[in-house]
Image 1 (cartoon, each protein chain N blue to C red):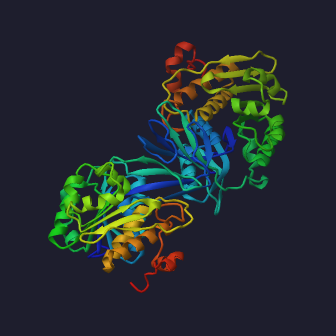
Image 2: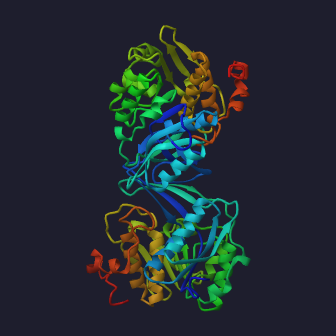
Image 3: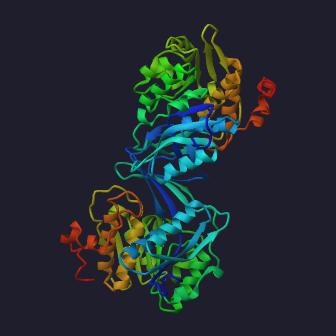
Amino acid sequence: MSEMKRPDVVGIGQCSYDILGRLQSFPQADQKTDLDEILLQGGGPIATALVTLSRFGTSTAFCGAVGDDEFGRKIEAGLRDEQVDCSGLKVEPGAASQTAFIAVDKDGLRTVFCHPGTTTPLEPKDLDHVLIRRSKILLLDGTHVEVACEAARIARANSVVTVLDGGSVRPGSAELLPLIDHLVVSEKFVGQLSPGKSPQDVSAHLLEYGATTAVVTCGAKGVWAQQRGDSLFHQSAFPVPVVDTTGCGDVFHGGYVYGLLQGWPLADIVRFASVCAALKARQLGGRSGIPNIDEVNSCPGSSCKCNFAGVV
Amino acid sequence: MSEMKRPDVVGIGQCSYDILGRLQSFPQADQKTDLDEILLQGGGPIATALVTLSRFGTSTAFCGAVGDDEFGRKIEAGLRDEQVDCSGLKVEPGAASQTAFIAVDKDGLRTVFCHPGTTTPLEPKDLDHVLIRRSKILLLDGTHVEVACEAARIARANSVVTVLDGGSVRPGSAELLPLIDHLVVSEKFVGQLSPGKSPQDVSAHLLEYGATTAVVTCGAKGVWAQQRGDSLFHQSAFPVPVVDTTGCGDVFHGGYVYGLLQGWPLADIVRFASVCAALKARQLGGRSGIPNIDEVNSCPGSSCKCNFAGVV
């Protein structure tokens, strides 16, 4: 913890190095196709959510694992450049870092080639308890599950709010879910958790795990959200010219956590996060398009009550 | 020309930085698929042919262009590490280097996403005439066409043998073809040059451009070759367990030029080059699998008369 003593948000989870290629249309196997653009940058749900928060002026720390390879060095440099504290980033000798090639066509359709890397999950000994205790919000994605559960228990015992970015149900999710205050999960996650149920039907089921808030993100179809004791509501996605949806979910989570830190009502938090995610989609890459606060406040949707200047 | 004063082989052409991903089967658009392995290394027909020659102990120099970006630095480092002279490599400020993502499935089927880069072709002022005059063989791929033609004319005037690696017919090919001694071209090239003609029918047509030798490479279907005044013959491809055919053509050209330098008969040159190309296919990436001379000589095909120990 050299850079900052008390980050407001600690994230534990995945980080990746992304190679993004923009093309007209996705090829058939055995063909050759030209890329109009190629872009390299760090990615991963938790890492990119923290970068979003950092750009909004929030102090953040990341806990995760990379290999001692070139990709790992780039992942770490990408986070440090964004003022994300990396004292909890474990560099594993001989391991390969997570990497992805993401082909994005002219309609924003994404095809992902992911090398999951060979790092081993963080172990309890890797966890800095003081870091968690002194934070305000703990953001998890369900990876490094043993450490994630341990961190969530420490959070619970120290009034640190826990948020889960649930992309897909993973081994250990059953143990983790009851430790989460805000379940902010994808349509895919609820499809795996409660097969056959629609996103709007599942929020009550999510709240049964003990969370105060259940949010289901459905991409262009918007977001369903419900606070315990309140009614379910829907937030539409903000219409933008979509170049690339890589990282939109991650940026949503960054915006969501930012809203929580401000103490906003859930409806405002979800609207703010939706604007953040929509603005991201205007550019290639998970991080290039992350808006700053001014951009969010001056977004074309301000006529849709998404001006947060007064709220902030 | 700091590293070596008189490289035996000068190559002018493309260089690329390749990102290779090995996977089980190529995905449909909009899917996510796991990569079993990811590998980064330099590529490009002429650059990889020179690396092959360099591993065989031949002195080489490369002339081409990269941007002043990370990929360009890696391309140059990859060549220098292989003892390829890079004094003729132009680094263009602000330009993007050529890059490719190559997905290779379990059957060796390749799907290529190529960013051609934004470098401009070499200009006549970039050409080191002394470098060409003092070499023994000039290897071209038809790119940088103005400089390629100029270099071929200098070669012609100085008894330097010219070899074309013709992958596809390009603007300026008509001017370049009559300046070439050895037309070593792909099935695709002859299909573009003489539509409707089979590779074995086209060699006479190729020789009409003035070359002494015409060779048509047909991948797994082997090679057709003819020397002026001799008959056409076929060389089968050597059977190997194919992991990745990336660079096989480039390595064939490296082996071909090596054989020329040794003064071997055409049939031996083509057989040697075929063994080199086949051995390359055993590994992922254009360069990882390039054999050394001992490997070529001890290859399982030695019973097929591909032992060159006596010849060398």
